[in-house]
Structure formats: structure tokens, C-alpha cells
Length: 355
Image 1: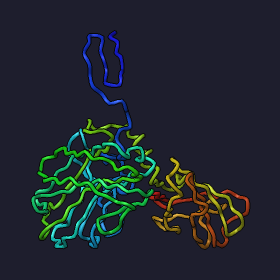
Image 2 (image 1 turned 45 degrees about the horizontal axis):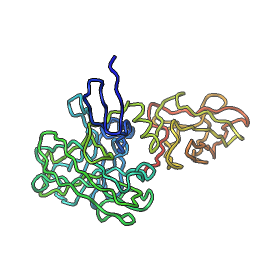
Image 3 (image 1 turned 180 degrees about the horizontal axis):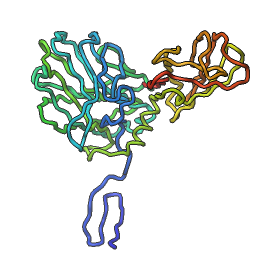
Image 4 (image 1 turned 30 degrees about the vertical axis):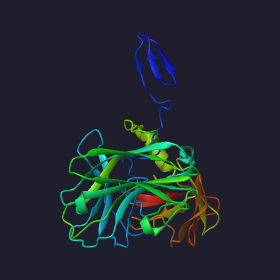
């Protein structure tokens, strides 16, 4: 079997030939979910875009627009029709819309994942194409990398917000209807603590049926040139996404929450996250009730209490939270177990720790 010697300048084979390589192998890409393979929120459905930060589609990717109503833009994960990059993130102006404010897709890289790039060369690469009715002048898509000296200051979009000592590097791209890979190399300023990547458009006129662009294969890596897109196993990519967003879907007795009654009106249940989250998240619970699409703790007769109370998320931390049911009547026996029941399949809770 031939042997190899791994040196700082590459690989030297026993026949004397060499192959240049970078010293860092694996986890080159600082972008999470660059191929939009994870889509916990919408499972591929269209989301709406507004002038506030909206995580509506592919995990870690937000869409923002300039003071435009939700009916003007949609942001969704789409099928591309190939096996190389089967999914893409698409931002589309709805047919007939005449508002021409800017809109964008963006991802913020967490401070802890990018500080080491300060003072180095780094390269952004991505694949993009446009729809037949893409309206920006000269089919212009503006790819930008932004740097700031603050820590995890969150989403920013044009004049909507700013970071401490924020600077931008811009790559203008004239899109075609053929998917093409583009790249640009930047120098990350000394003192950088946060980085974002965004893809921005300014439409013109009235939107046709295919006034959209889409991106996939987004990569931001150390070094002066792009490398092949880094493929990570789906389970690993999902785990990276769940640091920022998780949800639980279930029905009937598969909700995963078992509580204990602390009296006739009160019950507590515990929820553990699959992945430790970036911070104590914002938790949203499904509505309480017995009708289809609602949920409730059950009493000791495996039936709904006579009068429904309310359920809230309490003691929220990076590893889970407590469900607290209060205000029930003729409900529980102190000390007894109580199962959380959802009437029909659907979301039970979601937790967001996004930037």
C-alpha cells in the first residue's frame, strides 16, 4: 500500500508527486444549513416575508424586506430537480406586486463561530439563479458579507439596523436562469466578532409570475479561494440547526410530556431539548383545549378536566423548560401523573434561540 507524508505544504506521495491541500480538514464552512436541507419550520412550505426578521423557511436563513407587507414576498425552500443540490432558498415577489423596496435572505454567524477569522482572508461562495421574470435592473443580485466588532447583535438589514463598527464587502452578480457558482474573497477586519452573509435585491416595476431568485450551496470559509462545498451528514446539520431552533410534533399520547398534579387545578410537566440551545429560548406553545388542533393535560380518568385552564412555559433554560398547567377545575388528584394530550397530529411547542 502506498504511503503518504502529510506536510504543511500538502501531501507527498511515495512516487515523489505532491498534492497541495489546506491544513484544516472538516468543518470549513461557517454557514449552517448552506444547502437548505433542514427545514424544521415549514417543511418546505412557503413563508411570508415582512419588514421584521422572519425565520419562516430553511433553518438559520431569515428573510427581511423594506417596509413591505407580508403579501408581497414569500420565502421558501424549493426543490431544484437535481441530486447535487436538491434544495434551495427562494425569495419571490408575488405576481402583481408593485412595491420596489429591497428584500434579502440572510444568515448571521454566531460570534463564537467566527472570531478566529479576524485578520484573515476568507471566501464566500454560493450557487444562484433567477426566475424568468426577475425584475432588478440587469438581473442584479448583491451578495454581501458584513463584519462588526460587537457580540451577537443579531439580524441587520440595510437601514433597518446596524452593528458596532459595521462594514460591508459587496459582490454584484448579474444572474442568469442557469445555476452558477459565484465567489468573492474578503479580508476579515481585525477585531471582528460577528459576521453575516446576505443576498439582496431591489425589484423594479410590477412583478410577473417568476420574479424570484434562489441560492444554495452557500459556504463561508477561511482561505483566499473557494473549495468544494463541504458536505455534512444530515443528522449533524440538523443538530447544528437545533442549537437555534427546535420544535416537537406529535399527537394523542406521543407528545413526550408527562406531568404530576400539585392539586386539583395545577400540574407540572418537564420538556428536555434534543440539543443544548444557544441561549434560553423563546418558547411558543400550542393552544389549550379539547378540540382538534389543541392540547391539554389529562386528569386521572384519562379524560379532559371539566374546565380547561392555561398552560405556560416556565423555568426556561438552554436544556429545556417546564410546562405549567393552571386554572383547571375538577381536574386532578395531587400526586397523580398526568399526560399531555394533543388532539390530532401537529406542533406541540417550538423554541427559538435565533440571533
